[in-house]
Image (cartoon, rainbow, N blue to C red; front, side, top):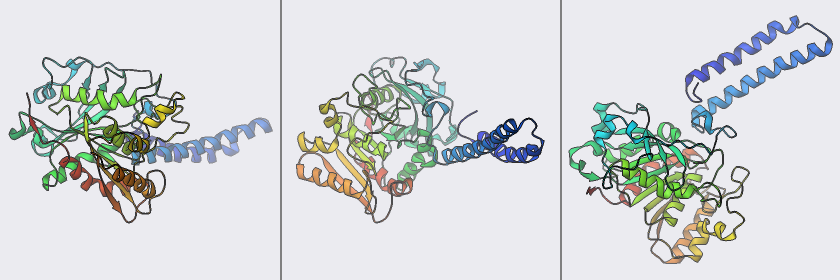
Length: 393
């Protein structure tokens, strides 16, 4: 049974009601010695509490889409499991509407198209666009992750039939999932509204979680002797998507909330050869560490510094990219107003090629409500800082 969806919620809802009813009905009928009766009744009460807690936890996850499957739950995921997909398994409809960006067939084992998530019908592709559910296998990092790929309606229209569309990597927070980006935050719908209003240009969205080696939070870092998360996101994903869809292999964008915002800024600042612009929605600029991250640096102060975006501004030439920093004046914490203002001041002091702008709300906390309030303008800004569709070779 899926972790998300009404079947599990309904089952737990029935259980949360049935357990107390059965407990009340059976309470006076418990037999045995005094200690045995006490233990049995204690187990009955514990069962009631467990079902109630599970119901609340699953309901909250269903609302926020923090975990998309059982395998993403801490302790259940196997970071060593790697699915090597077969490109030949893609449906004929996908093969007919995509084009490789490389000479000859794309290498096998990069992108595997899964069953249609049902975002739109075939007849709606030219007016609403299409969402593909895919797994992406990185040939450099060896990592595999699920993603949703949104192809805007212009991708299927005659005027762009022979043009490669710019692409943007959309990264969830931690915890968070690509399903939340698709359903709860509705990135495709929000981008489509901006395109229809002529405030944004068409771009392909690759929606995914930055947790590519769950349950560990790698903070989008190439961990010494560990998961090569940055290589996967910065090199493997753009290369695999460009080999499977009609998108540009360079000039990508990135956008994300919280940890996803930090990762988006890191992608642009560390891999400007691929990423041209990024938006950080209440993101932070220094890697956060806790029990879920473990040692990300292998004891190396150099690796720690290279993953600190403020340190990079102070000690390295600024890359030729554009960043949009969004926050709220009363937002606290590492992704709040004070931290964002410090980063903006550092960027301004470099006087280099990197251009940084800010979008500041008067009120808001570190939550999805603040992030989604900035989304329309952020998506418009991002699309206008990416290259326009280009003729495919």
